Amino acid sequence: MNRKLTSSRLRWQFFLLLLVLGLGFIQAALASEPVETRVQAVLVWGTNESQPSGKNIKELDAKLRERLANIFKWRNYFEVGRKTVGVTPSKPQLVKLSDDCSVDIKLLPDNQAEVKLIGKGKTIVTRRHSLAKPDALVLAGDDKNNTAWFVVLSFN
Amino acid sequence: MNTELKLQALLDGELETREVRELEALLAKDTQQAALLQELKWTKAAVAGNDVALSLPETRDFYWSKIAREIETAEKNAAVPAERPWWIQYFYPATGLAAMVALMFVISGGRDTDGANTESVPEDVNAVSFRSDAQEMSVVYVADEQGKISPVGQEAKNEPETDK
Amino acid sequence: MPTPMDHKSATDVELVAASQAGDMLAFEELVARHRDKIYARAFSMMRNEEEAIDLSQEAWVKAWQRLKQFQGDSSFATWMTRIVINLCLDQLRRQKRTRAESIEQLDEELGGVERQMPVIATNPSEGLERSELRKRIDKAMNQLSYEHRTVLILHEFEEMEYKQIAKVMNCSIGTVMSRLFYARRRLASLLQSLKKEQQS
Image 1 (tube, rainbow over the protein chains, first blue to last red):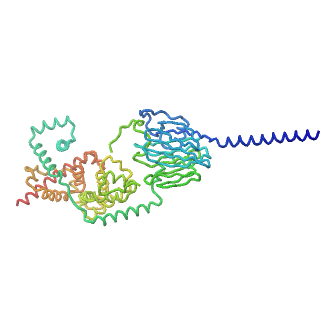
Image 2: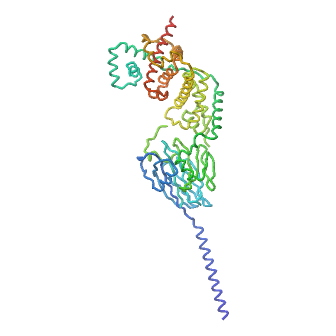
Image 3: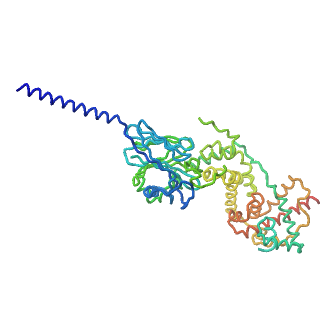
């Protein structure tokens, strides 16, 4: 009888060990899979003109419009381009927003992203942005005739 | 406008077409006015292209050194600027700004930090960075009054390309 | 690594762009190129060498401070000239408040004097060498009041229209026309007198 009990205990210990090892392997496997960050990039033009007649220009969504209007002085904001991409540490993305504009997005360790705004082939701004906060990153600047451009990057 | 001033306006090309015709009709009959117009023409022709041509009576280096010194003095005296910083003009009325802006840095041709956030711009670029708590937005704004850096193409704005 | 700019061979447009980006050497080159013209304009208005030097210098300092406002709508030289003209006008207005007016100048302001001048019968500049003509015009301009001299300078040399002059001089178009008319008639009379002096 004792011999039977002992072999049963051993069997349970063996299965328990297998379970622990199995869980360990699964966890390791999951950890090595890259976590993708969805990045949405929107190119916006800010102006006091109410009806610009440019091509491929449309009304900006109300929520983003309100956020920009609460910071900047222009009355109207129009969407020129929008793209969403998935970025992983091993797979940076170059997002083309217009003929003259690209955004290079790279994920860095310590929950950071490096973003380069490239205009007409030249890097205009290089920004290291913390992903710890839910902030959108806005790269912006002057444009002709008292207007402005904005590249709004949201990280999810 | 009296007739004499109309004669002058005719000479200077500042008269309405209708009045030109009326005046020309008058000149055909009034020799005194015609003589006055002739005098004005002579004077205009005499003055044309005969602006005073002078050389500055100081050497290049001396003249420039005074200008450079004045510029330097003016820039030093602008420690408390009379105007608001250049970047203020882009933002919503200042009454709301203090509530919105948590942190602000000015960058010029180098790196600046905002805790975990850093940015750099080329030497010839002037930019300011800040964070809006209320809108949960971190902003980097590039100064470029000529709009040369803009990524928004002419087509989107429906503006003709201008010759530079 | 970008090639350093050769300021001497750069165009004004390139120098202005470089100056706007903070390149003092580029701005110095602009000063060297246009200093004579700016000084000459200041002198033509002030008729005083020291004042003209001071005001032209002040114009260059202001230009440096306002460079970012220069949009390229006109040439840099034209833009600079406008700055020095405005500075000279400000100075002349300040001086007018303290300077005693001659009776003749008061007559000029009130108007009507030009009607008393007989119309000249012959061209007062006919047969004159350019350098001699320039000297006589300069001498004649010196005898005008600053308002009449300025309106003549702005119209004849800066090629401004009546309404542009009115804006710069902060007066009505009618006043611009009256002053210009008087200035021309007075100039004709003075040139004629100089011609007679020469002949006798």
